[in-house]
Image 1 (spheres, rainbow, N blue to C red):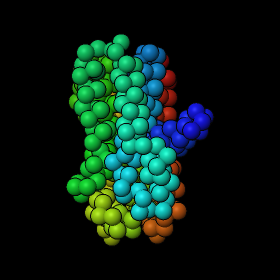
Image 2 (image 1 turned 180 degrees about the vertical axis):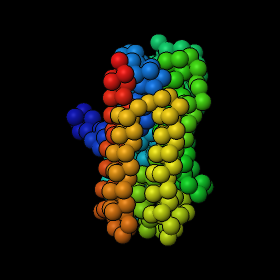
Image 3 (image 1 turned 90 degrees about the horizontal axis):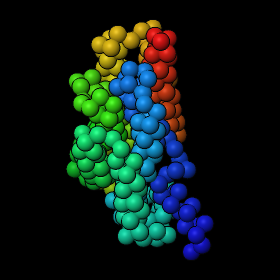
Image 4 (image 1 turned 135 degrees about the horizontal axis):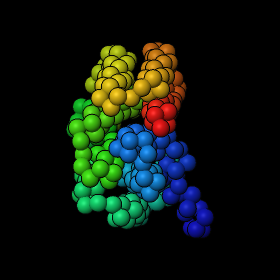
Length: 288
């Protein structure tokens, strides 16, 4: 196979052509980087965590497709994924995932020992998440931990410790992740039933919409509590209000449970995370 075609297969396999997953992982990491640095984070640390987010998200996508290769062939939407279609072998995919994870590890070598130690559970969480869909009733909660583990790592890298505020931020991210990934699961509900895969959309059943909105509310309440503890001001509160408005808009999209609208709501969560970060960053700028 020509090198150029192989390269584009890898782009597809790592979802680099669909960056929404990277953004959903990046925003909570940036919340933590900014808070840990009191609004003036080290540019080196910020760059390392941005690049690491891209690499680990890409590795996670490869592992996900490797784990789901037998399921994906039964779903029309996923039948042409590189591993399932046979364009990339399972062994080749594992080598790619390992290479991306090693590159991410090399990035954090300049950081302190605690950050290096925290990278071990971070990798284990990312690698094991795809398999939780087989036995956890709400695998989205596990995904929230995996997607948010950059939060304690950012504090460790900046402050040399992981204070309580970091774990509260992680909890907020877990609720937010359950909200947006349940919207995604609502798209695949019928396929998940057919394949016997667990998801929050199936667990919540007819209360799925209410559960999504409750998780948005829980995330926002925790984020408000974080802001209060850090004495953040009007700009941060405005960012949270904007995020609440975005969550309300998502309700209008998912309340009828139409696939296209639920997927649109999932994709739109980029703006929820961006609104929180914009309010946070502006608050620190205005303090200076």
